[in-house]
Image (tube, rainbow, N blue to C red):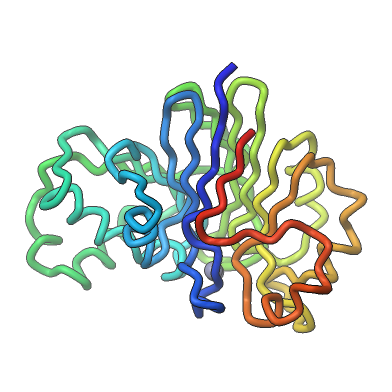
Length: 247
Ligand SMILES: [Zn+2]
Ligand SMILES: [Zn+2]
């Protein structure tokens, strides 16, 4: 049985609380490399942690807030000028993924964004309730309460007999209990401590529901300043840039 590894590249919130990079996680599973979200500092974090961007063939986007996908243009140019690639790059996300990604690419690099890339970008609109399968990895998106139009997703990712769930950005919903049932790892956003919103999670909310999660390991991420300031009151595992979770 092969080992799965998750490299936590960016564990900060949209404001890079504590100097942390914004959202990005690299999953190595059965020889495949998947990137979960691609915040603006993703390429910098890969290089800081001496990880290559070259093996990444699939990128999952949870939603279209900049802290989750504004790193893509830098990755696109890396694959042209620094570590050229010819193999396709697959980008999976909510409906409208191609438009949103190409808009941000053209806004940031009008010249490169207007020219054809030397590799193919394959965009896939994921639909909740359906499963995508690539490289021995099965991917299931599910709706989470965050952005409504277009919808925000969390993802369940299965390989061999392991299951990982990434919450993306989400408010509380009991659906999280169902989706994280029998997971080996739940990468769970935790933006706040004392602030309670319908569109993000806070630590007390996670703690009060902890017994109801059927996961072997929960790691808190997308950490805001409130959480970092009160981290000594937190009993759960807190992610940091550079954390490697081995499954
Ligand atoms: Zn976010
Ligand atoms: Zn967001």
